[in-house]
Image 1 (cartoon, helix red, strand yellow):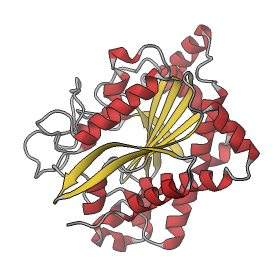
Image 2: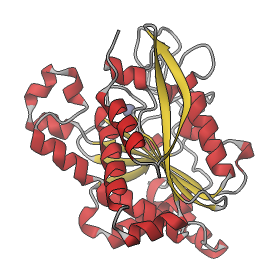
Image 3: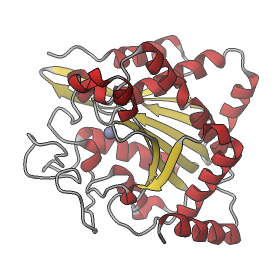
Image 4: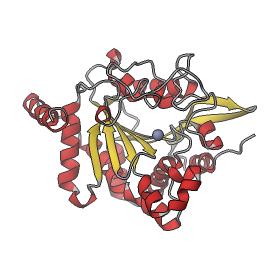
Length: 334
Ligand SMILES: [Zn+2]
């Protein structure tokens, strides 16, 4: 039996010691006779029709650093809430939700996939319409190969996230999601839908607006490469694509972002990580670990401030047309 991942213990400890954190178990998954919860913890306003931001991590169990980055943010918010009147005011205007360990069995076992061998980010019921990269794009050949899509519909973890996000969209004025991963390339990337096709999503102009606001407001923190995921590689079963194309979504602005932390940069500086599987996805040296924990703080705080400002909700039709046109020029007309 695998021990509980320490990140799960950390989350449970934070919940037990902070009554203002509203926690619920979205589902439980069983592995080797042990039950692991998928937990959501919420802070801030409980009103409907206010902006909501959701931080998701640990979709791929081997990419622990994303979970740790989000737990560090949650822990810092909870500590600051005791004295920081600006943060208290912010949380009256926005709901901040954390699902930092979507795949607890994968985290416990150190695997990308869940306990059934399924890659949760290939598991939603949506098929790529444009060519996908063989295997990486998702496969239904065998659970023994990576990027397995599963054959029995949505896994419990996928279904729990889909259901949670639908509720969030139905009960908020807008939703921004940040799903943290690591292991791709040298740079930090921010990807957005679609992954399954090369055509733009409806909220493309809002993503462009978000990018422009971040880059102009924090020019020295702009180490991210923003792009639709389809420009990098295309996949089947992407949960965010599935939610964006959900016809029940209505017209609530919904911007799901995927943060891909450039872990090969850690490998380049510490080649011994090549002999350590987890090291490919997680920084191993203490100074690099701490740097990674603080590197994304500005961007995550920006997203909370942006949500609370309602800037992405209040774009008028002319702005929407203008930003959509600029976004298409930047990402789709090269
Ligand atoms: Zn990942």
